[in-house]
Image (cartoon, rainbow, N blue to C red; front, side, top):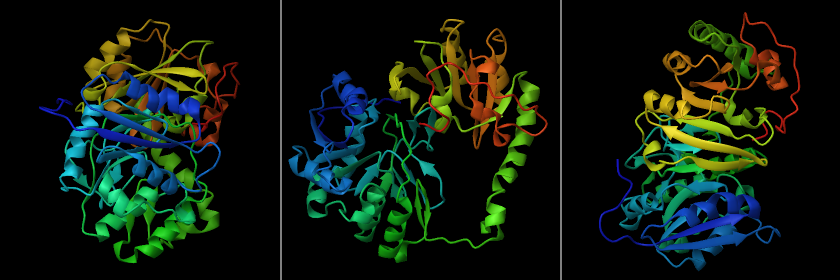
Length: 409
């Protein structure tokens, strides 16, 4: 797949509201500085470090008014754009009004995440080389014509201050008869935090505004569905993790037969910052991207900074390519290999037993951590929820690394 356009390329206005200059410079600014193609990029960062704006909508509407180009990309400060050309190529579909809005990731009526991107340490979303219709898109990046933003600004309602404003805008455009879609835009979202404060308030507000569109699928859950199943009872809810734990333990047993290594049940996307590293050493992140929708636009390793620690991220379309990338690293390198399936584990580890491996299982995929001693693993990976049935619980040992607590990213 080629990310290049034929012929002349229009410009794009990249609008971002930021509250952390260091994060913005390390992610979005750096990606624009690295771009050397023919697109005229109009960069419009909106400073909200002094809390001048009470909502993302108000700040981004101001950015849209300042924008010079008709194609506007509304982007988070912690996003790295791997291909501005691809951004503009997809933007052609909103400029000719085939689509009212296109996002880097969204959720369809079937509840499936659409639009391939890297989020922290993992690949998310089903690949969409061409736009796919969705219920709503995520705020991380979405493309809108400037004239549409001026005629129909983003909501500035306090209930939607910093959450779900792209969801509301998606629904508003759908009510106006416009199509809303997600498409592969080759981005890395290097988020350092998970902010869910008042997300429920935003979702209730949206459900009240658009009752005819419920249930509404979003990247943060479904709006307008209330399941009063017995599992919602408090006494059951407190133990619900055990059902997942039992299911995952059965799968973990199969993984343990393939790879002679400790197995933990942990969401590495949330817990990547708990991985201990040798002083000054980077973590080499290798993502498997079957089909290569993301890998095609990210041909060189990307240096990311997470809590003053360095992550070198790369992606491969096949296990063969991933293994080649692994073998190109020093034998002492600390590696995290994400987005694997059960059948991939043995192929990656075979012949590379000199590294000390840990197998991780989370819903939908496996990961491998290599070059980190078992006794140095995060204490959180010794909690009952993380230890598969039949595996001996490891005594928690805090490492001397600078890792943040589990779930810190």
